[in-house]
Image 1 (cartoon, helix red, strand yellow):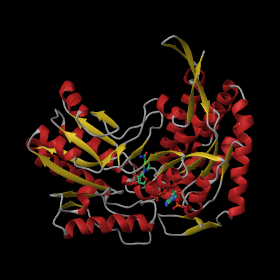
Image 2 (image 1 turned 90 degrees about the vertical axis):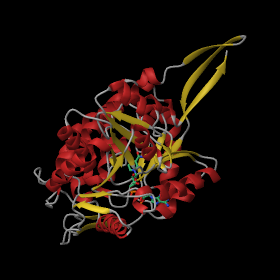
Image 3 (image 1 turned 180 degrees about the vertical axis):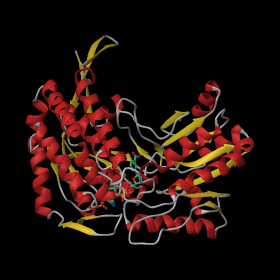
Amino acid sequence: MYAVTNPATGELVEEIRNATDEEVRAAIARVHQGYSSWRRRPVTERAKIVLRAAELFAERADELAAIMTLEMGKRINEGRGEIGIVVDIFRYYADNATALLADEPMAIRGGEAVITKEPIGALLGVMPWNFPCYQVARFVAPNLVLGNTIVLKHASICPRSAVAIEHILRDAGVPDDAYVNVFASSSQVPWMLADPRIQGVSLTGSEQAGISVAAEAGKNLKKSVLELGGSDPLIVLDTDDLDETVKVTATARMRNCGQSCNAPKRMIVLADLYDDFVDRLTKRVAEYYLPGDPADPDTKLPPLASIAAADEVAAQVETALRQGATLRAGGHRIDGPGAYLEATVLTDVTPEMDAYYDEIFGPVFLVFRAETEDEAIAIANDSPFGLGASVFGTDRDRARRVAERIEAGMVYLNSSGGSQADLPFGGIKRSGIGRELGPAGIEEFMNKKAIRL
Ligand code: NAP
């Protein structure tokens, strides 16, 4: 069942029945059929439609932000911020469509060739709840520009976002057989993938969902892009403004109430700064104890996306404490019907504890002490994940050298957890396969056809 449940109050607002198998098959048939005409439209025409979608996202930012606040508790201003980057992504692919899809002539031994950039067909998107609009934009904007068509299964707690996005695309001029939202269940995904009319799948979500979708894609010889979890390190080498470093760290970790795949989740601080860092961070997170209505722009601590999510994170904290971690701040699930959890700081987390290797998808800071730069890098890399990382330091060359030794798909120097339309985004290890955004993001489901002239 798809359902809207307000995580601030626990109130069930709306339930929507899942699509039947026939409805799902009909959706696949539509985007399969739509592919032949959508791909034949001139690139400039598709780009114009995608640009119009950017304008409509901008116009409807308040409406979309309010939906996300209701569905998954995102603070209203963060919701508006999310739509800002969505607009940017649609604009980026529209503005650069011609250049990104231009033929590439090649001199080859004994002659010449050209690489043409072609779509591959109808794709399936499986999307998460944490950024209900941004995640969809990363997959949909480049693929519509390229000429692929899409059937999209959104997270079951975000049906209103799913419908609002479909309306925008339709109003922008995307034909109803080029993009179709379907309220499919995750158990329908395997046979959707097996359907020969589907050429590939992009999933953003948890490791478990990634494993299942990648296995089905593999069995059916379908291309898959997986954007999965992370436990990003944030290394502090040195700083001439510790307060500012702590503030940036706290803000980045608390964005989206700690539910960002590429939030810094493990802070690794060199020994001479460690005690001071923990002390100041502990004081700063006290700002995030008071629960508030996510629709109120002054709220600092919104709920997590669901009661289940809050209970799960609280249980992870409890396990860490039982296994010997030290609680420096917060740690409590807040009484009441909402999905609230205090911002929490844990130290003394060791490899024997679950928290050391698991992703904690909520407002929890793990702080590690490193005696040397090498030890900081070793801790950073001692993770099954490899999504993003941050390095803070006053010496840019040193920070850059450290960045080069980190096992991650993205590293940010003196900033944390960002994302921008023209910068490739994605991870290695168990954080996923493939890239979104930037030029890389339009190449994943592209047939780079070599024509020998
Ligand atoms: P999730 O439970 O895996 O759900 C994501 C999507 O996958 C939903 O549409 C879900 O459907 C579907 N799904 C779940 N299990 C499935 C299965 N076995 N087969 C097919 N589809 C399945 O993840 P989430 O809790 O929404 O999102 C949080 C996770 O996503 C975190 O680990 C986070 O780090 C990761 N994430 C990664 C990125 C990135 O770019 N790397 C970005 C954002 C989030 P239902 O809703 O119907 O269950």
